[in-house]
Image (cartoon, rainbow, N blue to C red; front, side, top):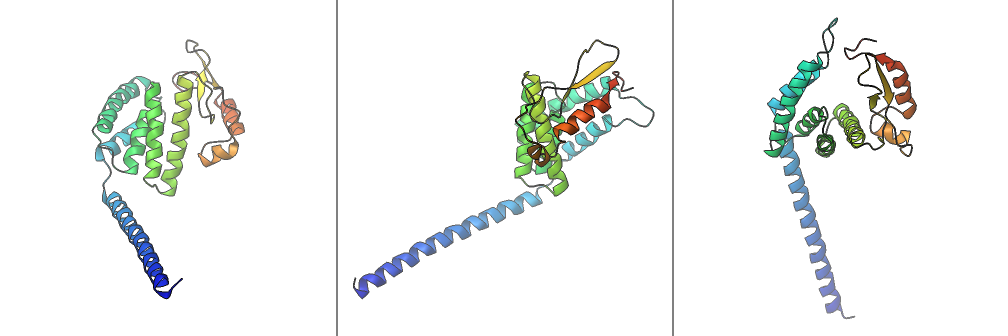
Length: 214
């Protein structure tokens, strides 16, 4: 091979490598710009308020029983509003997606549980702090289990319990049928209890009436 040919090949190789570096640099800059835009995007204040109300409804003051009727009415209104925000592309941040999923998983419709699970995945992909990521992982598992239970399939993680007889004056909660193929390692990574822990909770729950009294 002549010196001239070698030099030409060296130049072509340098141009090729230079092109790769330029593309990588452009991609890095694009990712940095997207990350910066995400970090400056503010959480949806309406969803923040709805999350606070949702959790407040489920944390009655000391000495007061859970008001199922009032919570149900607010749940219906919030579910409708969250779906509107979702269809209007108003969910922007990881927190927005997580809060929307939290409200959706209080639905009774299989499609809402499935959407809640998908929104958790998006919330995690958008980046969360450690504590929030654990919450999103746990909610992803819970909403998947609720979806599977709602279509009469075994749940995977063991987060759901079903009342044996809804008409009985005292409710007997039993762990819903659970897929034995899911490992406790996966449950741990999804931030939910082990299968033994789920069964222990079943025993602790005992018998509850509709108003939450044991």
